[in-house]
Image (cartoon, rainbow, N blue to C red; front, side, top):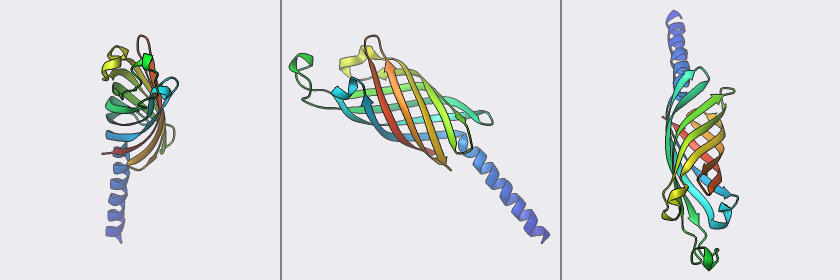
Amino acid sequence: MKKRIIFLSFLFLAVCSMQAQQKQGVKFEGGLALPVGDNFVETTFGLGADISYLFNVVESFQMGPSAGFYNYFGKGSTLPPAMGGGTASDVQLAPLAVSSRYYVIKELFVGVDLGYGLRLDKDFEDESGFYYKPKIGFSFGPISTILSYSSVTGELDDFSAIHLGFEVAF
């Protein structure tokens, strides 16, 4: 009986420490993005991925570096000839940011990514700029569902989208 109690105690401690360690570490998010505002005229939807490494700053707050790549697919012939020959090309975005999140409860978190969004498409190279991405997520162990809004604010234009993503923690 004593051995069982000791074994169950060690098992309980191991499971608890694994749960605590799942929050800190590498996070890989992939998802679907829908452009909003004026961008909806030029692009249909986007696919992309982010990778982050989050450190536990305090018990329920994390922060760390994040990088990603998103490709928003152009609509083709929806633009008039005066605005680019009647074709809308793809828009590529590579955000480099500091990601942070606060766990309101064990499963629910809110966060924001702040940094620089690089526009990689040749038509809008000058429109790289400030990048922000507020988000809310729900964790199911090492897997999370995340709803977010992102925007890159350049000199003359900004590019915004709503994201639905799934994240895996390693």
